[in-house]
Length: 265
Image (cartoon, rainbow, N blue to C red):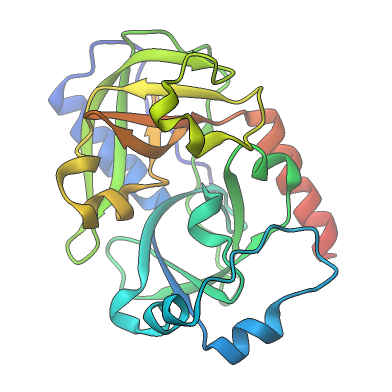
């Protein structure tokens, strides 16, 4: 299946009409994530004692709460390879015992997904997941940007901000580039203490992530596109009415996909 692109120039003057066209073109690549937790028994059985992964086992109270279907977590991801590889935030999908499901606008069908091991992406707080496709189907996929990001550049975000109503989109701009986390305020730097110091953060104008607690959670992992429809980063957190995204480094992500494909042979 061909990779989704948008016939537009990278610019800082994205009009509402262009944004709507971009949404229609790129929305099929954006998935709505639902993360459910198994019972405590299943959770315990799934823990690999020899694994070097950091595991947040939680308390019995946390597990009972997460097992309740009504308290399932929601997030956003973007398909970056038509064989079913998608990118999202590591902390959304990494808890042991979780079951990951992804669905797309225009369809009620849910696909199960599994997290692919990648220490490189984990250090950047990103996760590669493999969607379990049916009948050999392929998915629409987005391209990852290789272009330099500049302050003032228009960005376009498609997010699962309202899980019960489907996807939504917002236009914003790059307000700052925070490199190596040295520029990040101490009040929220703790969110990235174990992050790869080569990882960059994109600060944007408000994209609506902070409009409610539910939309804040479900919008995390949403892709930021440039005006050409290329993925620049994934929304990670909100602070002081600004949104922050982790920059997607194409070379590292493509390497993780190739590793995952080799491991599945």
